[in-house]
Length: 316
Ligand SMILES: NC(=O)c1ccc[n+]([C@@H]2O[C@H](COP(=O)([O-])OP(=O)(O)OC[C@H]3O[C@@H](n4cnc5c(N)ncnc54)[C@H](OP(=O)(O)O)[C@@H]3O)[C@@H](O)[C@H]2O)c1
Image 1 (cartoon, rainbow, N blue to C red):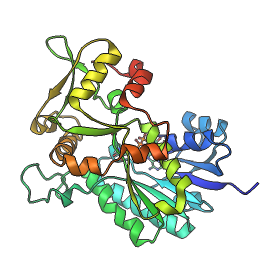
Image 2 (image 1 turned 135 degrees about the vertical axis):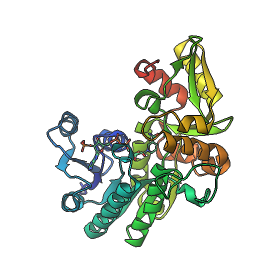
Image 3 (image 1 turned 90 degrees about the horizontal axis):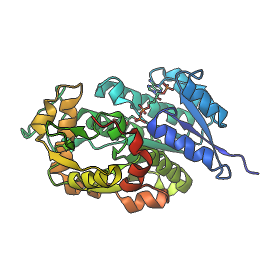
């Protein structure tokens, strides 16, 4: 039997990387084996991956030597950064740069960089429609990733640039689930107007990444945007209503109101939704459900995802 190709996965105990680890482990005859990177191999999540057959290695993206060791000998690497752990685009860019250099030095044949748009190409800093944040960004958690694309290109790493979509899992983990208003009715609030939002079950991002590694060289140098479905706020509310058996409304709030919600990063998310709303055509055109299904034939629709996950969604 030919030797199996190692895929080193950053964020292996997390959402995107975790989905990729599961996809590789589930396909024993696929020709790939997984190396799961974690800062703590003794953690519960890391031990669970080892129990399922993953090679688990200690690595921290803020410790370049550990990253180099972890990428050595890998055929492919999956690179993702963790904006919400620190809220710093500069830190994301430094980490992306380290990952690109480590991938180059390891001579990997295929990297996937989990990226997003640099929104400043659409909304220059001089554009007053949304505030400039942190001095030089419009949507900090997008712009730092988009700006980091060049680190992979400049390092000549054979890279597929993976444009991800809004996780439907945000309704579980990110405080975006339906909330009861003063009238006792459930509503999801988003400043999307009537625009459709490309969304995806986060585990399907990892499964699509696996599809990209399987296709290999033909996707090197390409930008691949994925989504499970593009749905308006009203369409998502209707799906919630069907799944929960209780009416859920869509509440269109203004981006200004969203920016003012007061939680860390609310201004960033307000600008993000406004970008997705105001540049709906370009944003949606970059994310194809058909391409995603080609990479991952069992990709979930929102209805399927809701049926599987509704019990986990906190109803405020
Ligand atoms: N929420 C959305 O809708 C959405 C949509 C598109 C893109 N994104 C982007 O997705 C990114 C996060 O990806 P995710 O959701 O997969 O993350 P996640 O679920 O928060 O996973 C983070 C994992 O990464 C590991 N990690 C954290 N810091 C690390 C470090 N310094 N070195 C090595 N590993 C580290 C942790 O593992 P250990 O503790 O085991 O080390 C953790 O399990 C963010 O940048 C966000 O902007 C989010």
